[in-house]
Image 1 (cartoon, rainbow, N blue to C red):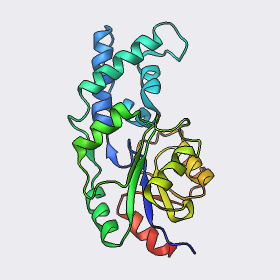
Image 2: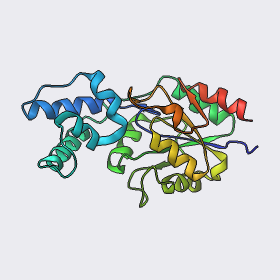
Image 3: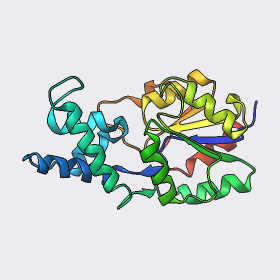
Image 4: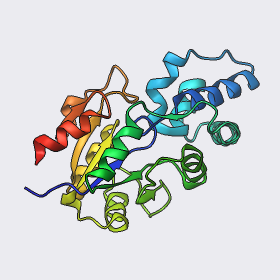
Length: 221
């Protein structure tokens, strides 16, 4: 069996708990527009699906509807201004990254978040050791669930797809990883809503805390 050399993470809901700041930005926009702020518990499960999904949640509008593009752009401005107020690496991630380094593995990020948000957020989070690669939603032509960003990350990290493990909290993460030929794990601690069925996504496993990645790697040796 091929040994894993690189562990790749989705960003929102897997590497970092970004929901508090995304929820804050959405509620700022709702109040600006004369609407009532939503409960954090209502917003959190939708965070992994990006700005468009949050605008739809808050305003009931979908892409193509009147005002949708304006609301989405304003949301992105508000989020950019409040990018890392309360966002943190998930508990267990710093220790995990250090252990991966000690075991001779590197790590990286593959996210659908655009680079103008990803890059400053990663700079403020300052994970140690630094990632071998960061692939944003606009780094290559296609986004997850397409395998192109995953394969780009492999090249940047110096590993073949079969030497990579991808960890994410959305079905598109698992599909992208599988289509690229990687092993995949579902981060159950991420932003998964009650209507989703991660056990049906076809991942190689599911974890409830970041440290369980190490247990899975031992079992996969």
